[in-house]
Amino acid sequence: MENLHPIHRVDGSSASSYKLTVVVPLFNEESVLPLFHARLESVLEHIRHDWEIIYVDDGSTDQSPIILQQIKATSARVGVARFTRNFGKEEAMSAGLSLASGDAVIIIDADLQDPPELMPAMLDAWLAGADIVNMRRLQRSGESWFKKVTAHAFYRVINRLSEVPVPEDVGDFRLLSRRAVDALNLLEERNRFMKGLFAWIGYRNVTLDYNRDARVAGKSKWQYWRLWNFALEGITGFSVAPLKIATYLGSACAGITFIYAAYFFLKTLLVGESVKGFPTLIVTVMILGGLQLMAIGIIGEYLGRLFVESKRRPLYLLEEFDAPRASEDLHAYREQRK
Ligand code: UDP
Ligand code: MG
Image (cartoon, rainbow, N blue to C red; front, side, top):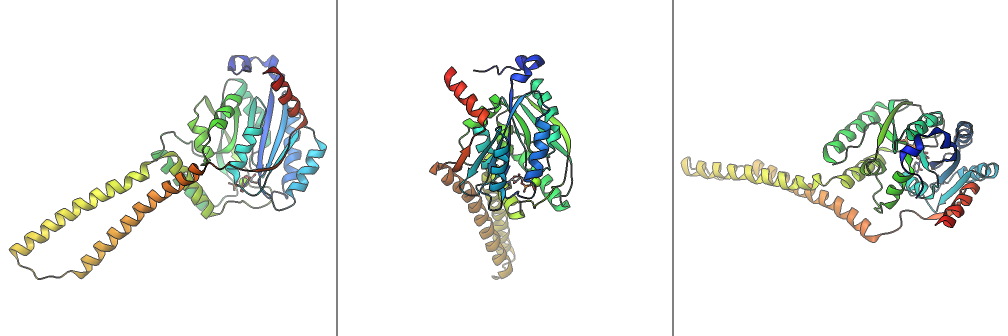
């Protein structure tokens, strides 16, 4: 094992022997990619550590793969992994984490919404002993009020339901220590709600604040339907509370029905009312039908996910991985030491 204990990391003198891996998941980012790389590289050139960048191309259909090849040709420290198709950002991040060879890993979006200039501060927090450096967005420029409101609502719901608190306004921009990355790589589930998984592994968390910029170019890949499914993924992946809804709603309905029936029974005995009440009948039937379908639907959400998990398909498929030169050497070195 390497020196994983933070005591060793606090020692600034040996800091330069550490390596940072920057993982960049991207999908159709041709318009920002050259700019992004230039900005990232100019930051990395000034840090005291060794570094590598791993771009994970999540099946881009624009010029991104060609741009990545050009970038790769200019720097031996760049690695490019390409998926066989678009698998999604969570999968792309997972791939990046398992390909990373650094002692610390930073995940960053390619659209420059997360400023690379914050990396030195993140590394400082890591050197001071943090395993996970979360980056909290103070302000979200260029995002609609609707997205902000729904995002806030989502965090409220998930934190009510989930046993591990998912910090609000912390995106995927973060630093992970080697042991945190190793822990994440152990998780084999197909449901990759990464925000939840980062929280689930525990370890020493530190949170830094920053202002999230607007996208420099290109369009956000998140449509509302996708976000909704993402939210469902998060909730079903980290809580079974919705499954209990049926139990409580059912009990409540049964209770009310019992009282209601007793009322009618007595009324007929005492007043002797003839059969009436088509509206109450239809309303009751429809409410019960609706509740039952909803309960089945909730069970279905979990069942569907169990189905996907049970097939144990790989999370993603790599078309190719062109590793950074330096990291190949490191891999060889590590193999030798085993
Ligand atoms: N991304 C990805 N696969 C996808 C969708 C997005 O790898 O299927 C990448 C995207 O290229 C970017 C990051 O994930 O680097 C964040 O995406 P985006 O900016 O669209 O999301 P937002 O910032 O609007 O939440
Ligand atoms: Mg973005």
